[in-house]
Image 1: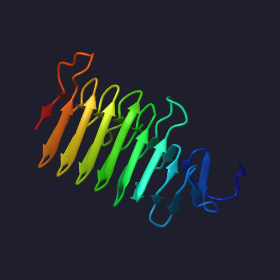
Image 2 (image 1 turned 60 degrees about the vertical axis):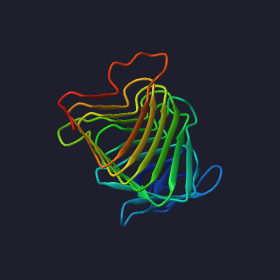
Image 3 (image 1 turned 180 degrees about the vertical axis):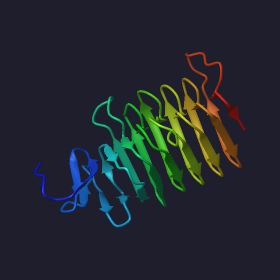
Image 4 (image 1 turned 135 degrees about the horizontal axis):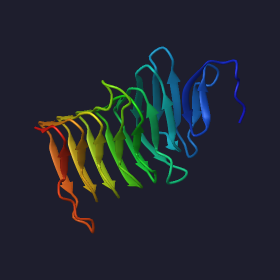
Length: 212
């Protein structure tokens, strides 16, 4: 792998290959491509079939999904999408995340999922985990999306709030389907939860402040 260190590095890695000003398009290992537009800070997956993404930015990054996309982690300790900072996942296509520690792990920032069909399965830890290091981070917002999760642990964990609007979620989890340290709000959505398994779970939905 050759990286031009003089080119601007956008702190986005598509399976060990850095996005830079001289390298804005990376092909998936099994087809499709990932293309970055610096003007809009948008990474587009176009029928991408490959390995994990690392996205680190102080600005909002948009992950635009076109066609049928698949990310399979190279080992069970890597997240399919590992990110810090705010991330918006949107588009007209579908995204499958498989064989990872977490499907999506956000170290600090907020996660927005809109319009797409997202499937996460065979993950070692929580399917979606959003952490925080300071106030204003740690919220998950899901709008007009379809999300299917088959998790060996929890479904969606937010260190702040979880908001779901006009969406369909099918959650199969051995632990809680939804966890938020503050508020969980579900509006005009169709939610199916299955946690009938060998681990006894007292609550499918857990919020430390409020559930609406």
